[in-house]
Amino acid sequence: MDPISNIVQLSNCFRLLAACFYQPDTELFKEEELCAKLQESCVTICPKAIPPIQVMAMALQKTSDQDMQVTYAELFVGPFELKASPYGSTYLDLNRQLMGDSTMWVKKLYQQAGLEVDIQQPPDHIAIELEFLSHLWSLEAESLLAGSPAKAAKVQNERQVFLDSCLLPWIQELTDNIRSGTDSLFYRGLADCLDAVVQQLPVQETTPFNHERRAAGDHASPSPV
Image (cartoon, one colour):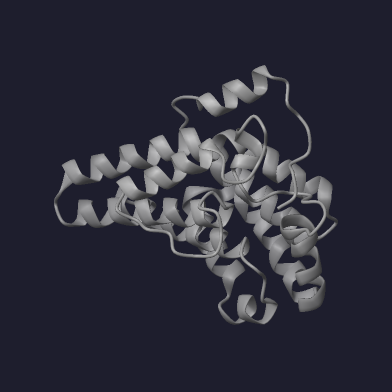
């Protein structure tokens, strides 16, 4: 596969992964063939993600919408305990609270990329971060197709900064929490799929937020919303 097609598939993959972290609608997931499209996007860029995607697809056929909704709430919503907080600041900030310093950094990077987030969620929700990365890969592909390698390089740098400072430092803890927090094969498969995809991405540096928190020895559970 040529480099531009590879970038397009990465954009598709992260867009579909983002969809999995929003409130579930099993019928819509089936109608939109979410798992089939996710698998198609990973054939070249991350073959290791295909087995967990197949687990997700089988689980989707056997799980009721009500059960999916309950599991989603237990993992990501609360109201009492977030088994797998979907917000980056609850992993990266020393006090593990919502809308912390790391959230403001995420918002700043969105603004620098010319993107305004206008939804009823903190900007460091995992789904929004994955969508942002999908957007940046799409912009890179468009720039290359338009014969603008300098613009593509700028977008690539923005994406790498975002990955290194905002997503990669906490994604492993999130997926570990998902696996330990539920028996749902759909969400356990999603955790395995996300792990496989991000592990094949390049890493250039470690975020200061991660250094500070690990140095403090903070391994407590995330605070509820």
